[in-house]
Image (tube, rainbow, N blue to C red; front, side, top):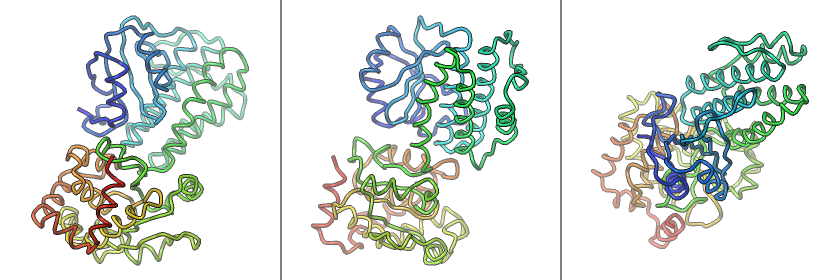
Length: 407
């Protein structure tokens, strides 16, 4: 069963009422931590929708289920008796939104193939919508309607590029281009039939803005309610997000303290901007400029990270104890070195192992929880208290760091 963020679990329990969990629509997502639930409820659809709307969620009726989006970008599909869905073009708008959401959440889970499939399904639903909205006859089965002949040349060329150019390495770009095309198509239609599509586009767009910094997240996403949100972030090197406007986002969110686990060669190749202060360099490169991938195997490298982690763990605790806004810990990709350091910190705080593993797995398909288990076993053998003592931090600093992190 997929582990959900604490806030989503609480929302379902408080607002939906009696329910049962259903399998996700994408088999590849099973077993991964994901802000996406699929459930069957027994209550009245309108009552459930009203309760969720009161809690700040956005609810839309789809054929056969209610789609719920939370303010944090999480999603719930709720099968409720009595929901028949819509007919005509609006039904295809609902299918478009469902497939688009599915693509976004598959991307967050690191499943590029499932993201590609969701994006392709969204394009297909949009084509069927345009066909129906322009008076096209119903098409049987999965047949794509010949909508291109009805579109003006710019839209026709954009659609051809979308269908031919889906890129596993630029899935966020594909989704953005799809939304641009949908907006232009709605403007071109300029009829009441386009209103439903325009509304869905405005609901979907914020999900991409929240998703632009891949693998950057608050550890409280998965560690809550055991830690306080807004204190510790983990992610890739900030320079990987520069084109997405990271530094402006960091300033807005008062993020000015960084713990950099990259080695000297990595930092020299991709340095911080000159005007960024508050960065503690704590190399964990294992004598390998590219990180851990070639250091005798990842399993052994994870254990080796633990043996060398005291300086980085000390820098992280010291940055947190400074009480100067959130702290970002990162390496190059934010997966291996960052994953081990964050897991050690969570173990020190007493975060349940299932929550620690869920945060680690949220970095995508390249992670293997068995490696993390080996690292934590090595830390247990060495002694976590001894590891924290190796940081040589005064007890007052450790106490302040713990107080900031614990709710």
